Image (cartoon, rainbow, N blue to C red; front, side, top):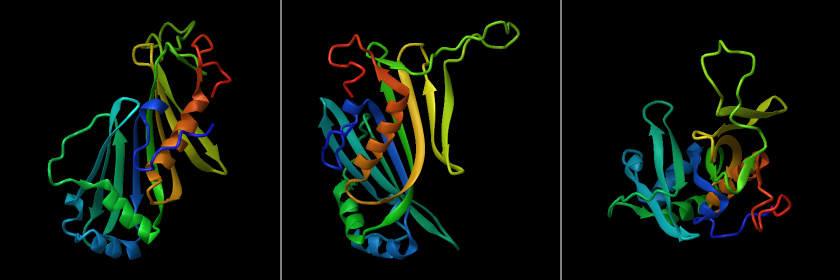
Length: 221
């Protein structure tokens, strides 16, 4: 199930049913000084830098946003936070193109353990969950609730947590997924697309396109 290829820095969230993807990646100490120098920043003002990209995919406005997060003092460190979503925010003239950040990261060939989050929404008219929700307990009238509309699923491998996925149906209609996972990756211009692809592939394990929707049969993906 290959993702539709777009520019790595302008992924099509809307067509993949994603509402946002987020990455937090720690920067190795040897790369921090070189990266900040390329971006004309110092450790003191790095967290004030904002990098943004606004674009349209599938007739929906998208926005990419990136900044630095760090700790000061002994053992200080620096991480890069990257967020892509469908709710553009105005940052004013102080925002810099997100390409500046990823050009610098790509040149330094930075490898990092990244913490990732992907959020998806599937309309009930076109998709169904592989797990039935809501779940209504039978023969247990003393429980302090009527039904469960969501839960967390986890996948483990070799003792490690591979991913965690929260499935939710707040109104018993549309299906929402929130997926968290981590993996080692190169911080380059393909980062947003790579994270979207991995999150999408996990999410699709838990939903199926309804066969009654034209062009959305179970074998169409």
